[in-house]
Image 1 (cartoon, helix red, strand yellow):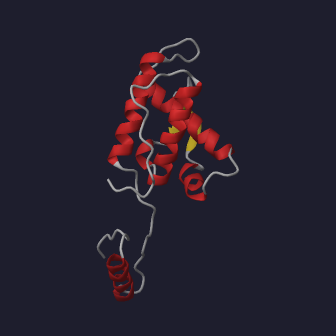
Image 2: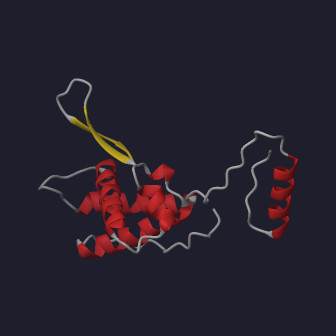
Image 3: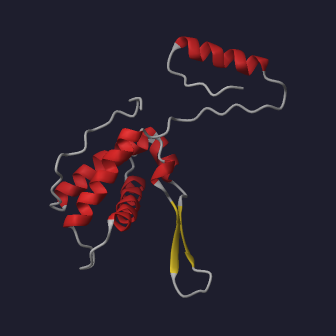
Length: 153
């Protein structure tokens, strides 16, 4: 069964035909679209700018360190918000575990990665990042353009 993007009546009709023609036991999986490359580029640009300007616990962190810190705080804030969209909540829930390292000498965070963000989650993350930067006086060279989750890549 080919992968189909349900963005017009013809694609929907073809998907219906595929489902009708599928043998018993086959599975169909309808999922929200993944984030766009433009969304990914926008939040990575913000991580880099934050890394140059901000400190946490009086320490500097590189882009990857800030990425982990910001994604974790975004997750926490969104899951605490009773008005969080169900699709975003589903994309973020149950995604982070703190476990002891294999040698037991440290703690390792396993889970949430931006590459698994759906488009709606990535759009909310960009909104959140812009607000976080304003609240923490991180000056962006240009605020990340807001993205509608329906935008194509």
